[in-house]
Amino acid sequence: MSKCLLLIVILRSNSGKSKAETPRTPSSPSSPTFAPSVCLLAPCYLTGDSVRDKCVEMLSAALKVDDNYKDYGVNCDKMASEIEDHIYQELKSTDMKYRNRVRSRISNLKDPRNPGLRRNVLSGAISSGLIAKMTAEEMASDELRELRNAMTQEAIREHQMAKTGGTTTDLFQCSKCKKKNCTYNQVQTRSADEPMTTFVLCNECGNRWKFC
Image 1 (cartoon, rainbow, N blue to C red):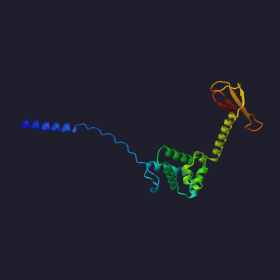
Image 2 (cartoon, rainbow, N blue to C red; image 1 turned 90 degrees about the vertical axis):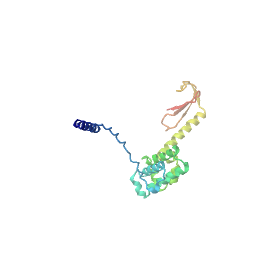
Image 3 (cartoon, one colour; image 1 turned 180 degrees about the vertical axis):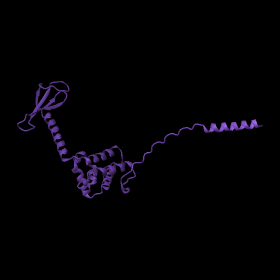
Image 4 (tube, rainbow, N blue to C red; image 1 turned 45 degrees about the vertical axis):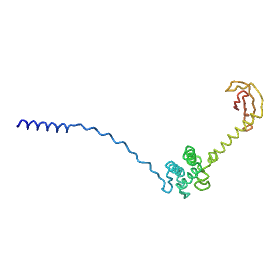
């Protein structure tokens, strides 16, 4: 009888040890959590669309790129909201065309070489509705606009001279088709004491080039 009791005690003891020594499966590390992006706009300027809200926020930041925005006493968030709304009401979507339109406003407003644009918007000389639809050429600085105009005029002049005829020659070889059937004009495009500019047209492939 005592042997049976002893055997039962031993079996229970071993059973307890096996339970205690059962290895635990290591728990997986928890995935990192990221806090949602915090919108810096006042609730009254939120549209309920995350893309539009982000665009308003970036437009506002572009208007505040220099501390002198405080001198105009304007609410940049409100102004940015108005600009964005004009763009959205015209395009009726937040597709790529909308985003490119917003991006070009931001780029030009932040351009350190074109501070006049931002000043004009902040002062009201350029309205929110107008800046929302201006072309890149219209937003450009006076210096850049003059440069673009000069380049356009030169291209027009080259084209017109090529069409008005000239002297046919085989002295020049076209770099594209390697033929020597060309027509050229010489024009004084700079000051009188500098060499004339020679404009050459390849009669074979239409390639044009110039040299002084």
